[in-house]
Length: 234
Length: 337
Image 1 (tube, each protein chain N blue to C red):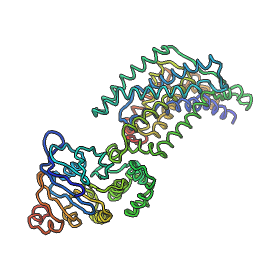
Image 2: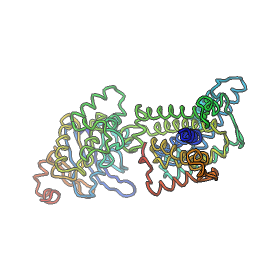
Image 3: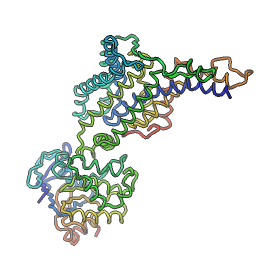
Image 4: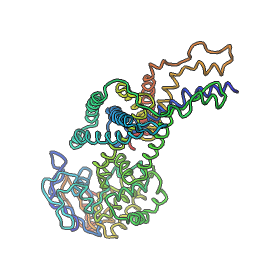
């Protein structure tokens, strides 16, 4: 597995929020983390990104141990992260958001990556010189994902990309995520809308109480009677 | 007709030109305060002492140059010394940041702690300035006093009232235009300037984008030192240099930054001029002005002055209170640069 978290236990301060967690994602694969509220979905993803104090366990990227790297160092190593909230520079234009996304890159090919992002999210082309904070919820999410893509990450972590957007916009956004995965990027996302997310997922993790509960292909989880009953509303 | 023009000339000479000058000086000062607030997220009480420090160094160099017979008359010699004053202030802010604020950033202290530290630095730098140059009034302007004097204006135009433009006023306005233009070009056109705005806009996301916070902080301090020295030297050239007066400038400068919206550079400029125009207009005696406009029978006998100049600081204070009550975020919405 390209990004691999093994047996992770940790939390923010005193108590552990996730226990003996296993999570992994390979290149060209969309993996979805679902589960009830407060089950540690976002926390487990943050653990992979170095935003959590890990007591035991290991995180590796392309075979190299990255357990003790800071989030910034992980960005340098090819990981991208889209937080759930405050994931854009609201007072800056779409263009500036994308340029800042590429801040760590010192090559001259940034224009080409901007072009790729604009092809993926055509609506951003019309809003290119507009302040990102003035855009609609769905468009803001596109800016947020676009910004993260600017580093040309090999792994993209998305924390509830569909939060606060309408169902149609969510479908559209998930289609784009499939497109991103198709370019060979490993995509791991946490989703509240479990059913729709599992429909586009190659694999899914169901977490309960900070632990792994189910793990299978997206289709198998959707077909599983117990998963349906407990987590997908029948 | 002639009377109306004469009245307007009075306004120009006693309100518009002085307020434009003073407003420029306040704007430069408030820009430094707002930059620090926008990036480091605290109110820097040591700011006017930075102005005093930069001016002190500039004055000493000016004296040295004057003694050596260097002159760029009609321009004041202080302009040659100015870059070195800026350099000294940059060194001072980087040193004090390294010795004090950096530690509190490491331990992720609250903004209040930073503010208290800045008050400590205010006393320290203030003491340093008084140790170096003393607490007395220093005049260091030389070169031509006027670009055009009131007498020359009267002779040239034939009006009864004169309109004067002092060299220091002209220099203040021109340098302010250059400095502000350069600052906005830096913030909007360069990569590190954009990174500064990004950091101010969303610190976490800036870190995720690989923006180095210590570099952003360093550039911010350097810009602040440049702006503070410019503000201090221009104010000193225009009036005179006295440490106590510079300390008192803290109120109108903070009022400018807050009225404009803390963290907003445009707001700092607007706030600077608003405070300056209010201060000057409210403490001006309108007797002569209305003497031209009103028929002789109604001509004012008293000074027609809304407030004595002694109370000029009250003006900034009142504006500050009104803005905080009605529009606490300031004219331009503050928070990020």
